[in-house]
Length: 161
Image (cartoon, rainbow, N blue to C red; front, side, top):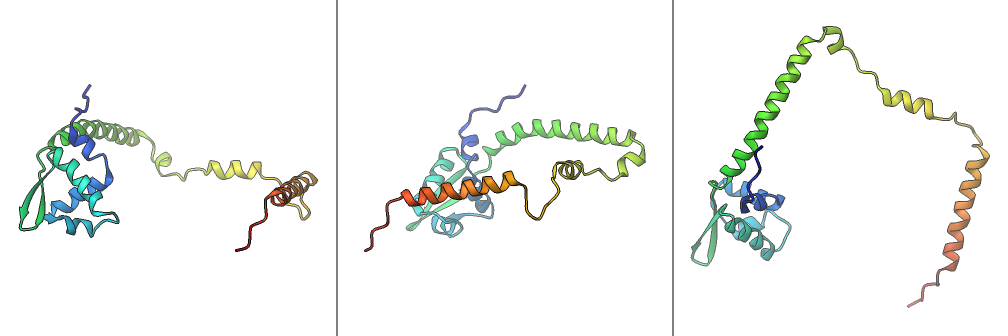
C-alpha cells in the first residue's frame, strides 16, 4: 500500500487559492500585485498564501527594486505526481475491466433505454389532486398559520427612531 508522504507540499496544494496561484505562476514570474488582481482578497492574505507555498518549496522569490517577484518551482510536485500515479494505474485497470464487461454484454442490453425508476416511484406515491384538498392538510395549514400569528404577537414592538 502506498501512503502519501506527510510533506508540506501536500498541505500547500490542499487549498484552492494556493493551487490557483500556482496555475498563474505557470505562465511565468509575477509580482504580488499581479497575483492580487486575480483574487478577491487582501494583499496580506495573498502574502500568507505565498509564504506557505515558499515554505513548501513550490515558489521562489526574488526582489527587483521594490517589487517581489514569484516564480513556480515545480520539483516538489513530483511527490504529488508519484502518489497520484498509483491511483491512475488503479482507475485505468478499473476502466479496462468495465470495458471488457461491456463487450461481453449483448448489444440489446447495452443500447437499451434505461427505465426511469424514480419517475415510476414518484407516480405511485402521489395522491390524486383534489380541488378542495383533504381535511387533515387544511387543518395542518391552519394550525401552522395560527402559531405564526401568535409568535408575531408575542414579539416586542419595534421602537420608532
